[in-house]
Amino acid sequence: MKVAKFADSDEETLERLIDKFGLSDFLAHVEEIANEKVEHLSSNWPDERATQWGLSSAKAWSKAANIVDLAALKIRKLGL
Image (cartoon, rainbow, N blue to C red; front, side, top):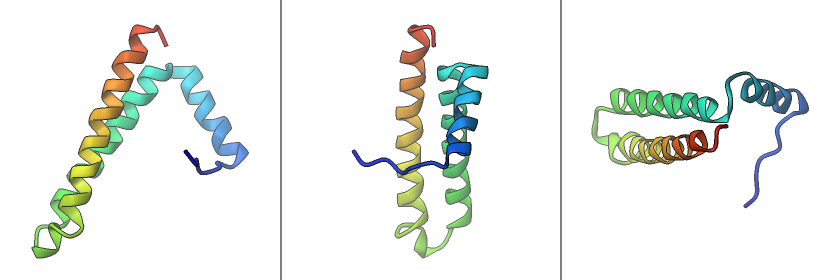
């Protein structure tokens, strides 16, 4: 899988956050952000374009949030 390259300073920031909070808590925050995206997309695309843009995107973000949440729970069991 091709992954976008972060600037060194961004990567260092992410690493500091993971070191400070732990990987599972970091991912829990990512899950919260993804759920906020779901709310934003759902509330800002109330018209007929919603099925084309907002709701399909909201559904994808919701699925992503669930996957990240599951990953965070499994990683927490590892003590990370």
